[in-house]
Amino acid sequence: MQDNSAIIEILLPLALAVIMVSLGLSLTPADFRRIFVVPKGVSIGLANLLLISPLLAFLVADLYGLAPALAVGLVLLGASPGGTTANLLTHLARGDVALSVTMTALSSIAAVATVPFYLDLAIDRFDAQGVTGDVSMLGVVARVFLITIVPLAIGMAIRGRKTDWVIRNEEKVKRIAIVAFVLVVIAAVASEWDLLRDNFADVALAALTLNVLAMSLSFTIARLAKLENRQATAIAMELGVHNGTLAITVGATIATALTVPAAVYSAFMFITAGLFARFMYQRNVAAHPPATGAPAAS
Image 1 (cartoon, rainbow, N blue to C red):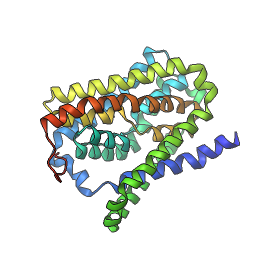
Image 2: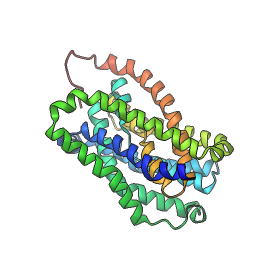
Image 3: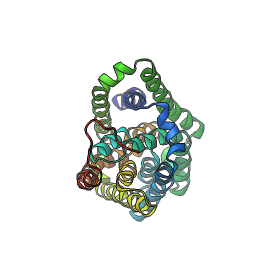
Image 4: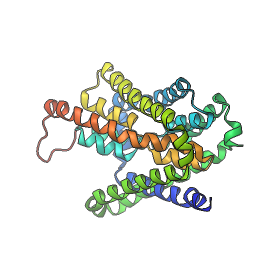
């Protein structure tokens, strides 16, 4: 139990801080202004991410009849913002990277309000008070702020002052962030191995269903809204590749059982998103052949 306590109190927040700083290093003020420059893609993407994804999590948790703590954990994952891995996979799929980065940045900031909001709704909906204990939403807001906004701002400040250094080391920092993410998932699985083993079938099917539904529905909505494939690719990736570390970190500070859905989902999302990236790569390249040295278009 002491080892689990150390993971919860020190290692998880530290790993998430590394990931959020790495995201901040990739951001500039232009990423936040893009919502006014190209509002349609950003607005549709954020509506999918902040509204449809959490509601799908509620639906899937009900559909599979998950235990209260697991249901709340699935909603917590569904309400979490997009992750930096979504930006990388969008790049590999030749999607709209600028749109992906913008959605990740804005949803990470919005998480200060949306994550506690949906967490509170889920606790009430699934009658999980007896499992999670007396949860202080003010405390959750404070934790989300400290582990997302603060390191994000630090990363942006470093980029603003050490731009050349950041550009030279950006890929190295991303690799460190991915390693931190993998370690968090492994730690979460190890700390709740008994619960995971007993509920793996239900949690795995629910996580996979949420992942596929979210990516498919968000891509379809984007295309119906007349967005091009590259933008629809970015939006689908954001819905499929959440910041699982945030869900695990917040969940672990409330009840470690809440971390199980995010840990299982994080294992599946690389497979499904990777297959989607491979499929969309050919279509996006055919529609927009890369020009040597040209930046990704928005």
